[in-house]
Length: 254
Ligand code: PEP
Image 1 (cartoon, protein in one colour):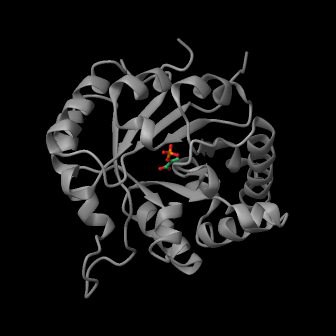
Image 2: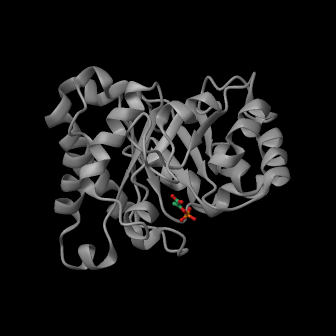
């Protein structure tokens, strides 16, 4: 059995799915099942328009509530964007940075990543910094190089004493929403690359950083993924939209 030094973290990313009433029902159900949260951390990353309502329902429970994206300035002419302080104001305590859909569909640049991570930390939002290679990068043996470049960008302004507040999610782009999960060996290898890079950058404080796996996590592979020593948690998209599929993932060890 894995002896864990880091608290398991199971995060659901709803993307642009659900509606207000189904969101609140899901949060109520999950809230009623996660107990005191001492043995695992559970969070939902929700469409910003629902953050206030979802946070209100989650209140009084250990359930974390986060935004799916953030801009790094405090205010100004950035039509359509949200400042970190705005997410906090409506109850978010965390945020995703660099999700592959932001990078690939919305062309977010590496240069923004470090500023977003820094802005999140400076505003008391716990970032999950998402990284991962495309299929052509993997096939061209560039996975390690890509991961390190993304880490260089996201951690550009991170210091050792920030380490305990940051999470990294390894999400191979080709595994997101495709039903194709990375093999355990591929997950282990990528997580080892990330762990080594973090140790070089931040020293022993890097041991506090959790590395999640994301990419077609389902109830039937969650237990095996969580059994890998290198995996500290899971970032779940599609399967986080319904209690029937998300609860068995949260309770992967039941
Ligand atoms: C994600 O949204 O980060 C994700 C991993 O999605 P899915 O679980 O649907 O592949």
